[in-house]
Length: 166
Image (cartoon, one colour):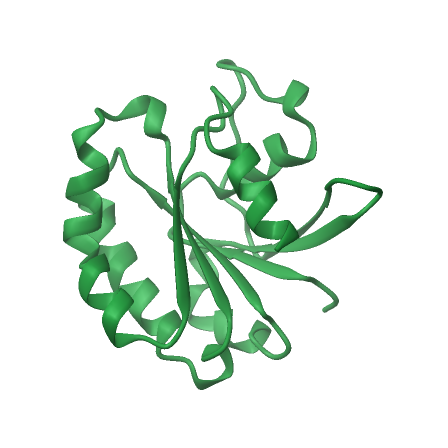
C-alpha cells in the first residue's frame, strides 16, 4: 500500500469526516455524517505548492490488523474523540500499542483530539490526563504532536496540514 501517513483511531473517533474536510472543506457541514470505515480508505490531500500527501485511513474495527500496515510508515495520525470520555481510555490502550511497535520507533505521531466542537474546553485537559500524555512524551522515542480539531468548524485543519507538510 503506497501511502505517506496512516490515520488510525477507535471506531467513531471522527477520522473519516476529518479526512473528508482536509480533502474538500466545502463537503462537510453540520448536516454531514459518515459511516464507520470498514477496512481501509485512501485519501489524497493537496498541500501547498502543488504538493500532496496520501493518507490511508484504517477503520477502528480492524485495529488488530493495523500492524500489517506499519512497514515504511513515517507518520501516524491518531484520532481520539475528545467529547467521549468513555472512549478515551480505550483509545489510550490502542495508542500505547501503536507507540510500542518496533516498526514505528522513528515515526512522527500526531494525536488529534477531534470533535472539539462537541466538548467543553476543559475536556482537552481531561483527555490528555486520561491518556497520560506527559508521561508518554517522556517515555516513548516518538515525537508526539497534539492538535485539537473539529470537522464541522474546521478548527485545527490548518495545523494538521502544516504537520503533514513537515
